[in-house]
Length: 366
Image (cartoon, rainbow, N blue to C red):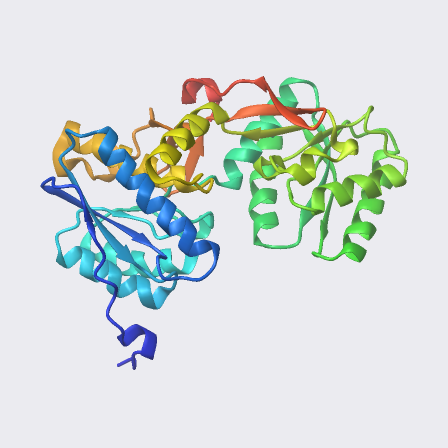
């Protein structure tokens, strides 16, 4: 028998209840975690509350549980939620907590809609609501191919994110008839980035490449673009392709990435949500708060149509998907999500939509 840790032995925070409906779902959030995690948890809690306010006739009751952002917090929080009658779990946020929740919920045949971006935590019955790199790669590479940008050089971080991106990239490039001329994977230090970008530049200068895919964001993408330029890569002759991480002031301000393309949700929906959220709670929501709003909206829609019997794999993996703050999305049978994304071009430091989100998943080509 495993000896519980001290943290495991602590009872989960009892939490609060939102709504008065007869169908119960739980939302597991890192309410007592430190730093930004607790702020995100509060924003997600308020986003769930906002969804209930905006659908006053829903028959939903949400059991808010604190998972403390850890596996040892998630397991007892999940057990408590199931004991109180939760018929679906929304959350957790962090990958290890998702795994812990799944270990309790799956044997009880209770579906989980989690907010982690780690696609290894997804499985049948454990669905990821978040923005996954697979959707980014699908959208940007398919769009680039439609514009004749099919001969790629690729710079990827040597981490789990880079591994997921590379697997999806190989599939999409094959499906679109493209060709990867070179892939270099860099460690997260400037010396490694400089070495790998210099190697890519040497291939690009041979004249066989017409697009460079750099999905990393933050400070990495601008630095890599600067090294490429210093080694003779002309941004006017090459199309830079990125990921949703490019919607970042540091990336948008990089002159070498001007004219580059990247995928992302049409922000119109989030901006309207953020305005309603701020009017209700007094602060601007963190970006991922919309995931909680959409998860609750999905639960309301399903219960309105089917009752609690709607929380089944068949309903949750409906190929037509659902529509949320950030546009259309759907869950696959393996638990990952697909999103209908726009394509943006960086113009004078501002992202401008050049290809709107597909309105249906058949149009998206998934």
